[in-house]
Length: 349
Image (cartoon, rainbow, N blue to C red; front, side, top):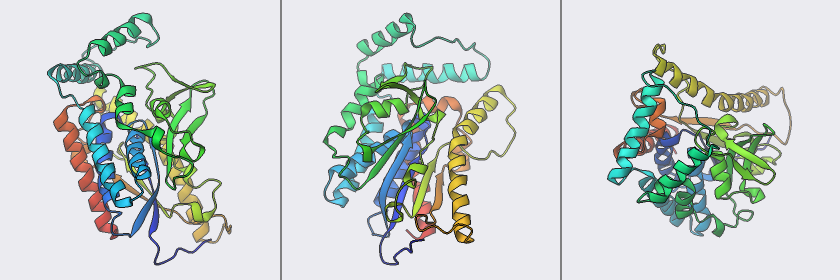
């Protein structure tokens, strides 16, 4: 097992769970974690994410990779996170109405007050409606995630294999059922990879890449962890993995309404793969600590989490993952900064 130098900065990988608009919390947390790197106690060497978490991670990765000066990269990361979420918010009156209709409809469906109609995104009528909405929208990028990503992520400028910073984006192959972590070390990060990670099957077609089609990584790794440590020499592995968790692990009370039951079911499903990967890493840590496993290729990797406060998480329902109201987005981002700063203060980093 490799000993850690007492003078070198701790190597950190940050894993960002998916959760739609709730990942504005992740954006705020990342701003604090990136800024907290400045004193030199730790250095971010990897980022991973799924769905909205993947987009936040990609914005930071892109900013840090494009700037030769790390301080400039940190400043650029904060600007890129702010700019993306500003453009992703409902800014125009028509967008505000669209947003209210979307959120309210979902809340009524989850509460059983409105029937949930099932329609395939492959149906010509559905595809036609989506095309017309994007065509006549005052800001097409509000309804077109590809355009929004292309506006804010100059991925083609990043020399992926040569940058020392790793990015992993989680998705799942629809036909194969195999988990996929698109890896910057394999030059796999592009807009399609991010769209694959955010492809919800009830909202749009699967994203084709190569010979496979992909759905949202919420169905696989949420977010990827094991690729930070698998098949790598100890010197290339992070010392710690910090997880920005969106879905609460615990709830104070039993869900009794149909809306609360639906919300809790989705939270548990979103945590399933993440908890499995955490338990695996913690088990290996335990074996190494107890000397039950002696392997020079292994090392103990500490895991820490940044989560929402109970007061904020308790107010959020499943429909809030679709909410793009500016004040709501700003509140979650500010809360993410506060919670991450609290974690840094407790660990002295």
